[in-house]
Structure formats: structure tokens, C-alpha cells
Length: 327
Ligand SMILES: [Zn+2]
Image 1: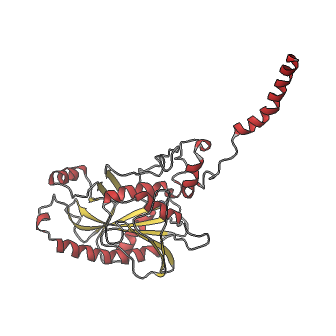
Image 2: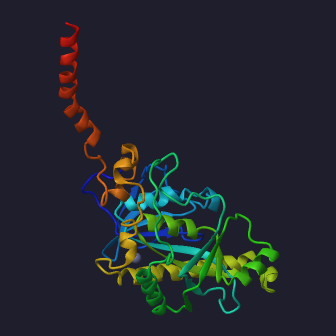
Image 3: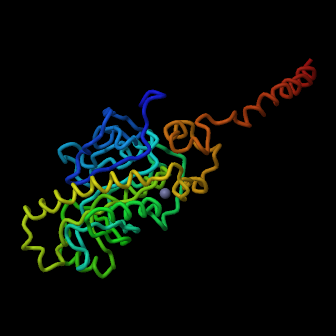
């Protein structure tokens, strides 16, 4: 945990394939957070970028060592929440599911389709935070304000950007088969990746605005050119994409409003269905960064305790006539 009064960051950047660091950060500090869910994928690098504190996290770990199914998504998002992050810019390499979305272009999705099977997508319940249930709204999984800012930032760079679209999140780590790829196309998705749906869900639970910059590296295997695409060509596109992503991030940071006015900011307000007094104390303490706006980490004195003390004299009184009777 960071000491009180030390730096915190308003913006979190989660870098995916190809983006393992952000250049141009000053006043750099490395922070090795612990969370109730364990440690995040990598140390969080805190630094100033154009006078704004940002926290950078490498999704697949330093050196790209963590597979999509093994990423500790909960620790990643919780660590950013502990730092005070309000905005998460996610950078992700994706495959295209549409002819007109070409390699080298950028998509700012506005929907996710979660086709994963082995991810834990909530902070609430389970071994870490038993005794609490929350159902946050997810009809609009992306922060509209942040998405608009990202689209605007792309516009100022020399890049073709597609505004909106559905990001299909598959389990992986294998890419899809041709049969799957053709079926996914019929579902009407626009890009395909392996990591963003759990992040978006957890960010919503943490009341953090989330938007993805999906950098298109190639067409998924439905496309006739897929087999002729070399690894070198994909890496080349990825490298170019990453350089663009860094420029776009810098541009986007200058447009973030000081205060948020979107609904992400209060996503938990009406989502907690468990009566507050029934939420276990350990769960309250562990989830304090998420819950402290709504519930105290220490519950108020239980009403039963007050009753018990009130009853004590009555019991004693009740004993009196009995003992009198025996005499
Ligand atoms: Zn928002």
C-alpha cells in the first residue's frame, strides 16, 4: 500500500501486446502493490506525463509472460483503484472481423461480447469478499466521455479511426479456428481480442471510466489474406501501432475533464443488493477502496448488542422473584 499523502494518479494506462512501457514519464516511481486479490501483472509505474500523474501497468507482465487466462484482472484493476485512478485507457492489439477495418487502423469499441469461460469477473463474493452481491449496469460497458476523447485524440494523428463497434473477447490463448471466425462474423462483431471484457467489467465495479484503443494488427483467419500474412508483417504493424498509441494517449490526456460527469462514477450507488449491516466486517475492510463512499469499513454497533445490555437488568429482575419464591 502507498503511504498516505504520497502521489496518486488519476489516469491508468493498461498496455497490451507491444506496449510495455510509456516513454516521456518524469518523476518516475515504481510501486509494487498488494491487493486483496494478490499482486497485479507488473509493478505499477507512476510518473508525470505532460503535468498529469499517470499509472502504467503492463497487462501481460514485464517481458510478456502472462497468458490472457492467467492475468490477475482483479488485482490489476484494484491496484489502480487504490491509487485513485478514475480513468483507464486500455491499449490492446486486436484482429479485424470486418473487411473495412484494416490492419494499422484503430477501433474505439463501444460494446464488448464476453466469450471467455475461465475468468473471475467480479470483486464481490468468493473467498476474498464473501457475503456481498452487487449487480452493476453494463448495458453501456464503455465510458462515452473517455471514448469520445480517444476518438478526438486519434483524429489529431495520422490514423484512421473507427468509432464504436463490438469487441469480441475470446478465452484463447489459441487464435480462433476458421469455423469459429466465420460464426463470430455472423454474430456481427467488429474486432477480436482476449483480454478486455474482464477489465471493463471490473473497472465498472470499481467506478473507473474505461475505454479501449483497439489497435488492429491483422485480419482474423476468416479473411483470405490471413495465411499469407507473415509474423514479421504483424510485428511491423504492431510496432507502428504502438508508436501511434503513445501519441494518441498523450493527446487524450490533455482533453480529460477535471471532474467526471458520467455514470461510471457512481456505478455502485444502486448496485449493492446486500443490506449493508449484513456485509461481513472483513469484506468491508478488504473492499474499502470500492465501498467507503457507501458503507463504513467498520459497521455501526449491532442493534442486538444494545438489546442485550438493555435486557440484562430485566433478566436480573426476573431472577429476583424466583429466588424469592425458593426462599
Ligand atoms: Zn465514465
